[in-house]
Image (tube, rainbow, N blue to C red; front, top):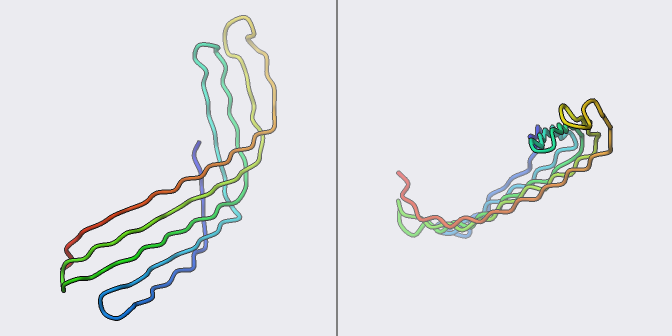
Amino acid sequence: VSYTIPFAELSGLYRFGSMLSLEGALGYSPLVQSKDRDDHLLRFKLSEGSGNGSAWLFDLALRLQWTRHWFAAIGVSGLFIDTDGTQEQRFYAGEYTGYQATIDQKITSSQTSGTLEIGFSF
């Protein structure tokens, strides 16, 4: 599945003194497009679909700058996608050659990741 996700994002930074900061961002897209292509080689069946939907994105990080150059950070990010559309299925060989069908397609995806960083800035 491949997605096109143009989105608007609101982000901010809050400093707790000179050493600690919290950064966050929240994004939304009502204009997600998905394209899906699945070739079942053993069954000679090609399924191609597309859909439209929405997505939410977020990012949150806490950073500790313990010297002028050295820092540590911990963060979490997420992406949640939901699309609806149609899929066309067709057999291109074998006993069902030529058979085609169109079905409804719903694709959802959620990804969350965490980071732990130690770095040197200059």
